[in-house]
Image (tube, rainbow, N blue to C red; front, side, top):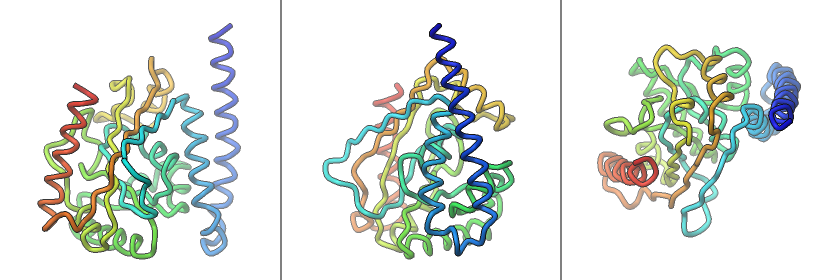
Length: 248
């Protein structure tokens, strides 16, 4: 009977998500001037609904010593596509995502209406435009979230961090909020080459252990660093320590 109750909860959660998604798609067709105030909080609730539908237990670990700043530039390692809903489920942020996400079925339209910032990673001009859009968003009072590895690089950290988040922090004075995340079932969550979105969602649903850990550490102030190289090197060294602590 336990398996029956488990699958019944999963079916109900997916029905809930389908209804919520239909509402979000209808609202997304309205003029942005009408939905700009209500859509972001609805998007956060929709992300939480998506997390429940996947059956993931999302655990937030607060390692910081004081309260979080009212505005921040959230960065995280990026082993899985799950972060696209996991991060905004917990944090009120505007995500930076690759341009391809815009064409992902219903997800792309909803993400666009929620204020997601998009970038074509392979084009230098597009990367510069995305950097300026992030600066504008932060100066307008928004918190943003991005992945300094520049995309899903696997279960372990990539060789370095890119400069985008650190440049935005130095330009605006808004601190970086570092989040280190990992999954108990790393193989099931990891976004690999030639993996489709549907395949990955099914792998997550069938994962033997669907616990996700999101570790939040003390914010990093731009005033502590001389330039973006110093800023990124120091932050990357922290992530290497956390990787050793949580994954090795």
